[in-house]
Image 1 (cartoon, rainbow, N blue to C red):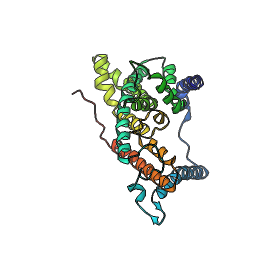
Image 2: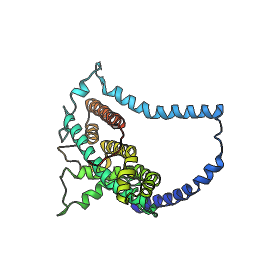
Image 3: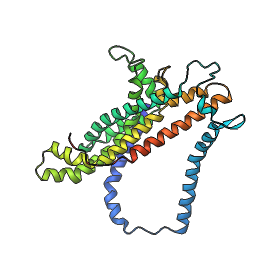
Image 4: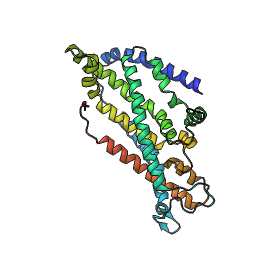
Length: 300
């Protein structure tokens, strides 16, 4: 699976590089943008409505199920998450799962930004970056279950025995989120270096100062967007986390899976309530980070 995924990604990177090389010529020949016909507008409207329906309908059903009870609309599913386990092995605490998810996602976002940022700098300043990007993008093509299993067998012996360590889950989540960071930050760094970094260097700035004072501040928006994606991806990650989460501190997705694995309508209702809480957490994170002011990154 790893070899196949890397081969496909490398082939796509090579084809993408050739397409980008031809892009200026194609754009020059494109001329004035043609007006959309009525049929085209109708087609786009239908496709947009269908896409929204595909996304919204399942979420709407989950929300409705979270408020459903034997006697109609109720908040009991939210008030009793994890209670009445009916033979469940592990206790499920909604507050504990939320705190674990937020803490792990925040740490994973920092790790993904740190490592992904360094990789992005290497890609932005390297003339041969297709193979590097294909390697970084492997987690996108490989099942998260494979990554989680890899972490289990890789960190099971001293001095890297991290079994039971709270760092293992954020590390796996950061690995899943890092390709998004690189895909967002690397092109922004390359464009900023070409537009601002070279101008600063022409004015006499050293390469480090041009990068620090011109290139990085111009990429503040891309860095913020990468942080958003890394945090949200880590917040909802399940495949690798299911292998690595400790029994006494599951994340919200793992807690939802445990509730769904218990018999009874009450467990399904509580799982739906926890899923709605996860939706709210994700939306709140997107709104909070998305509305953060973008300004120049200054040296302390």
